[in-house]
Amino acid sequence: MATSVGFLAVIMWAMLALFTDVSGKVPPFQLTAMTFAIGAGLGLISWLWRPGAAQHLRQPAKVWLLGVVGLFGYHFLYFTALRNAPPVDASLIAYLWPLFIVVGSALMPGERLRWFHVLGTLLGLAGTVLIITKGGNVGFEAKNAFGYAMAGLCALTWAAYSLLSRRFASVPTDAVTGFCMATSVLSLISHLALEKTVWPESLTQWLAVLGLGLFPVGAAFYAWDFGVKRGNIQVLGASSYAAPLLSTLVLIIAGAAEPTVRVLMACLLITLGAVLAAKEMLFRKKTA
Image (tube, rainbow, N blue to C red; front, side):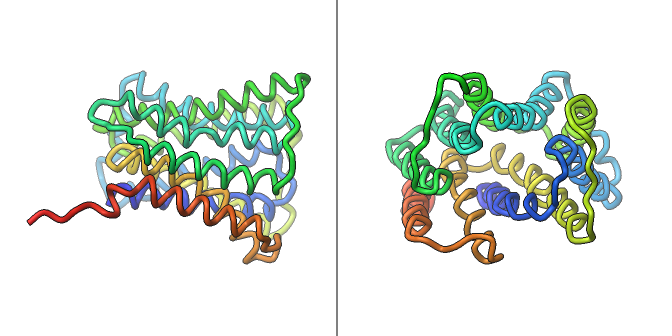
């Protein structure tokens, strides 16, 4: 159940590319500030039906540090990487985080890392390489070293956030509302310092921003928090490679991309990898 809830986050992240594309030319940090404010509002609205939920924001400093570094730190490092390295190269490095989660899970109490977890994740990575690089070559150059380093830190940050969240399984998911608030404020500060403000120009663009805040940058983080704390973290890590594939499929359905043999191959690799990683969960022997 919890693993399925966590995978809902992966499904919602698949809408990220389409909504971002439709949102117009809003700068990254401004868009992050706007969407995380909506994501925080989602949590705040839910409290109207759950009196007392606000008390879950009273968490130790280390919990707040983890949450804010995880959400804001990931996005800050990702955007910094994109500014200092080719987007394809940076995205490929940044998307090592599912592999880091699966391998890093071996260090978690009560977790067992098996060969099929690793192999399934590597198959997913191979499929993601096909999606991100579009079947072409990736040209890593020394002049982009800083951007590559930021992308690597980005991947490590999200993997560490996901794994360490499991150590704080007793912290209610309501705390994510506070993390979203803090991320929105810090993103606004970054925007004012680094970017020029550009507002959406049409109702469609505003709806895309709202969609981002409600789903990929809103409900997805609540679902992911619940999943990594209570679900099978190796399966979640491996299945996360479905996000770029699903994102591409969404773009194809929306008419913004073309179906190709490369997409089919990526689909097969990522699906096989996810099934292999979830082998124990999917084909668990029934006990009498």
